[in-house]
Structure formats: C-alpha cells, structure tokens
Image (cartoon, rainbow, N blue to C red; front, side, top):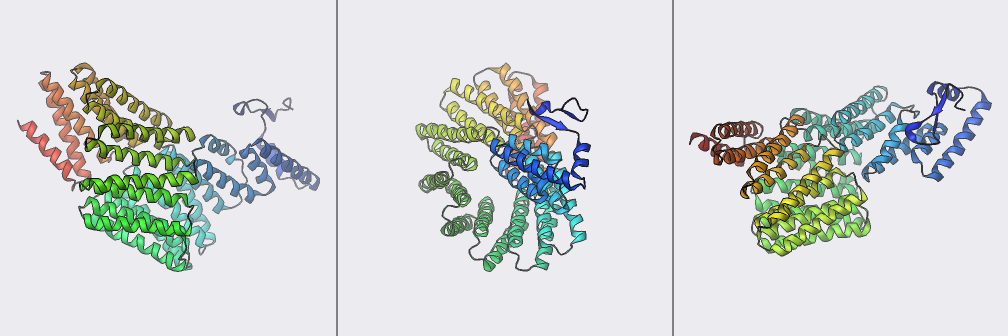
Length: 551
C-alpha cells in the first residue's frame, strides 16, 4: 500500500501504523455512492471493535465518529475529561492526535471540545494555549447563541468557559481581566436563568463563579466585596437547594463557599465567626454525605474544611483541639481513599493535612512525632505520584513537605540531613517545572527552598555556596515574576532574599554590594505594597528595610 503516494507510514505512532492522505479520506467519506458508504460503515464498525479490544481508545473513537459523529464527539469529550482528571496525560495526547480529524457538525460541540482542551493546557501550565482554547470555546458558544439565543445550555456552558478563563487569569495575577471575566460568567448564568428560572445547574454554577470571584476579591484585600460575593454564592446554592433539596453537588459546593468565607473571617481576625462558619461548612458536607455516603469528593472536601478549622485552632493556641481536628481531617481523607484507593487528589490532600499536623507538632517541640509525620506526608505524595507520575501539584507539595522537614532538621542541628533534604525539595520543584515550565507557584516555592538552604549554608560559614544559592533563589523569583508580574508573594519573597543576601555581603565587608541588595529589596517591598496596599506584614518589612538603609 505504501507504494501509493497517498499512503505512508505514521512513524510518530511507532511500527505498523499507516496514514492515508486527508484529502483522499475526505473525498472517500463524502462519496454519494451507496456501495462505498456501505463498505465504509462495515470497515469503521470492524475497526472500532478491533481498537476497543486493543485498548486504543483514541483510534476507536475516531472510527466511532465516522459511524456517528455525535457519539464519537461525546465519547471524545468524556474520555478526555476522565483522563485529565486522573492525570493520564499520555491518553490525553492520543486523543488530541485524532481531535483535528473528528467530524464535528455542531458549533456547540466545537465549544465543548475547545473547553476540554483548555482545561488540559491549564493543567500543564501552558497558559497561552489554554487561553486560546477558552476564547475559542466562548466564540463558539457566542456563534451558537446567534442561531439559538434562548438556548439555556449554551448560555450555561459559555458561563463555564468564561469562569475557567477567569480562573486562569486570576492565577496569573491578571486581576482586572479576571474580575471582568467572572462578571461576564455570572451574566451568562443570569441569562440562562432568565429563560429557565428553575435551571438548577445554572444556579449551582452561578454560585461557583461568585465563589471564585469572592476568592479573588479576598486575595486583593477587597474584603467588603469578598464578603458580599460569598454571601451571594451561598444564596445561589440555597436557591438551587430550594428547587432540588437532595442536590448533592449544591450541598457540597455550599460547603466550599462557607469554608472560603470562614477563611476570610479568619484572615480578618473574626475568629468567632470563622469557627462558626467552618462548622456550617462541615455540616453542609455531612448533609451531602447523608444523601450520598460514598461521595468521595464530599469526604475529601470535609477533610479540607477540618484542616482549615485545625489551622485556625492552632493559630489561636487551641493546640489540643487542633491536633484532634487534624486527625479528623486525615480520617476523612482515609474514608475517601477506602472508597477510591486511586484518588490522587485525596492522597495529595492527606499529605497536606499530615504536613500541617507535623508543623504544629514541630511548633510544640514534639520533634520525634513531627519528623515521623513529615515522612508520612511525603509518603502520601509519593503514593499520589505512583498513581499519577506527572501530577505537578503533588511534586510541588512534596517539595513543600521536604522543605519543612529540612527546616526542622536544621533547627535540631541535623545539618547534614537538612542540606540533603533541601536539595530533595528543590529537585521536587524542578520535576514539577520540567512538566510545567510556567508554573508560577513552583518557581516561587523553589526560590523559598533555595533561600532556606542559603540561610543554612550561611550559618555553617559556607559563604561561597550561600552567596550562589541566594542568587539562585532571586533568579527563581524573577522567573515567577516574568510569568506573573503582579504575583505579590514573589515580590515579597524576593525582597526577603535580597535583604539576607545584603546581610551576608555586609558581614563579608562587601558594603557597596550589600547596599545595592538593600535598595533592591526596598524596591521589591514597595512593589508588593503597590499590589497589596493593606498587607501589614509587607509594610513592616518595608519599614525594617528603610531603617536598615538609614543606618
């Protein structure tokens, strides 16, 4: 067959894969001869069965799409979203290979496919590609709405795409754009509800968008707006639950909104309200679990709420309660994992709870327990990574646990172990950045680990190494800021690293270089305050820096 000019080996797929020229296939597919159509149908039926037996899902979907374009597209979206959720990125790539060859005879379905692709690119921190796909999804839905302006599902899906784009912009510190996109998403849900007042999913999704908008207001210290938006989100979920009292997802999402509201109360030192609101969030999850005892996501989210409650109890020196609540959070994750042993998110979240528990144990000088609990946290992340080796989130969180373990080892004068553990933390961040080179958080966290390593090297009089490591930390923060210029934590952390580098240079009698570092640190703190003018901690750092410069 390869003697024909329109047939060749598809070498990128490996041995025994062949490709026919797209034009030949299209002309063949569009033939009006009944005999050819019959032959095609038989061939695609056989090939779909064959590839399903081989487990070649993408190839099977291609042939299913030729038999029934809508069945093929629906399965493509379903399998793609499932593979993405389970971090099976190789399967996602296989599905992407056949995506451009799918027959899609609906603008609405084009929107669904582009939206799924956007989620994939976000996961891999391919932000420009993700933005493009979300914009294409929105454009497809807009085009569909010109044809069917009262199509409530399309308005709802447009809202989902706008919300995801806003989430992306928010993560990149594109705050103005994100605020606008969230408002547009809410408007899309409102339009859907104008046509169908009892559209439960739209009420639920509107609640989600309001919640994420409130999160952004909160991060920008726009507390009044955040409080109002959280209340509106909860009201949207309550409306959904009035229409459908057993709507498990709305109970779960209401729990999330209450949890975030409690986080804000806590940050504003409204401790009594925060404690009450955390309890309300946990009660919402319990209601969801009464209706659906095996709802893994609700068990997982209940663990998150308990974890946040424990964080607050710890900050209020309610240590006994906090230790107990962390254990309850871990138990919730364990219940989720009993139901779904391969749930990567639950393993990851269990690791976070164990790390927070270890942090508390460490602060209470329960050093033996803390060392053990840090190791358990790292083991949880390793289990997650065994299931999903390319999970950027798990690599990043493992780095954080290793970093905290190294901090404890350093405080216990276990210097050799600490040096090694810091290097392991940095390696975890590097692995995350190999998978997702534009992950702003991982660049920032790597900078923090390098800064801590430099602190230890400096204390051990390893001055040459410390100077180099501080420079590497600053370079990591600079990379984060190239990707997200308004990322306040990176500006702040860069300022701290520059100040410490200046201190070391001053101790080594390099006064001119030290002065340059101090001046650069002040610039970083000023930039942080431009972005977050109400942050008292940053203002304190700036004032300390000004005093140091004046002296």
